[in-house]
Length: 298
Image 1 (cartoon, rainbow, N blue to C red):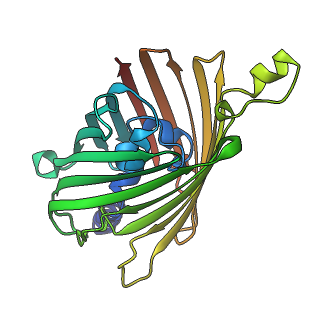
Image 2 (image 1 turned 135 degrees about the vertical axis):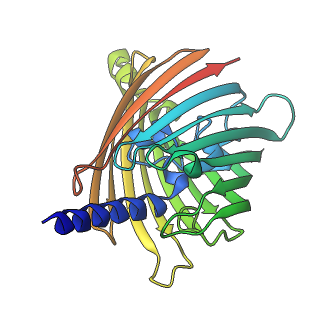
C-alpha cells in the first residue's frame, strides 16, 4: 500500500511538472486579456500589448506604467512584473517589460526571468511592432533550460465601424522550449467606442459605448514533432459608466480538449486603473488562476 501511494504521488508530481513546462509564457501574462479568455491581439490597448501584440502600443498617445501579478494554483507558480510604455515622445513608440516567475514547490531553482524591449510604428490605420525578449527559464523534467534572446513581430489593422484585425508571430528566433514555442496568433475585434452610433436616442447611444468583443486563434508550437496545437479564444468587455469594466471569456484547446472560462472586472479613470481576473479550467477543475494589475497613466 505504501509503495502504491508513493507511485501515485510521483505520478501526480510528474504530471504537474509536465503541465507547468508546456505552459506558453506568452499566454500566462496579461490580466485584462486573461479575463477575456486570452482574446485580445486585435485590441492590445494596454501594456499587455508588449507580449501579446507589440504593434498595439502605438494606438494611442500615452505614458503608462503597469504592475501585475498572476498566480496559477495548480503548480503554485507566481509571476509578477512591471512594464512601461511611452508613445508620446517620438514617431516610434517604445516599451520595456520585466517579469519574474517562481514555482513555490521547487525553491530558488525554479526562478525565471523575462525582459523585453518593444518598438512600434503607426502608419495611419496600420500598426507594426517588434519585441526583443530575453528569457531565462530553468530546466524542468520535461523541458530544457532557456537562456537566450528571441523576437516577436506583430501587425494590427484598424478598419471602419470599430473593426480591427491582427497577426503576431512569437519566438521567431527558436528557443527549443515548449514554454516559449514558435507560434502564430490571429485576432479580430469589434469596439463600439470606435463607432459613431447612428441613433437619435441618447440613452441607446450611451448603452452602445464601451463594448469590446474579440476572437483569437492560436497555432502553438509550430516546430513540434507531435504537430502544432490549436486554441480558440473569445471574450467580451463592457464598461459601465465609462469607469467599471466587466469582462468574460472562454478558451478551447483542441488537442487537449480543455475548456476554460474566465471573468474579471476593474476600475479605470484618466490616470489610474486596476484590473483583476479569475480563470477556471472546466476539464481539469484543479487548474485555476488569479491575477491583478495596477495601471498609472501620466
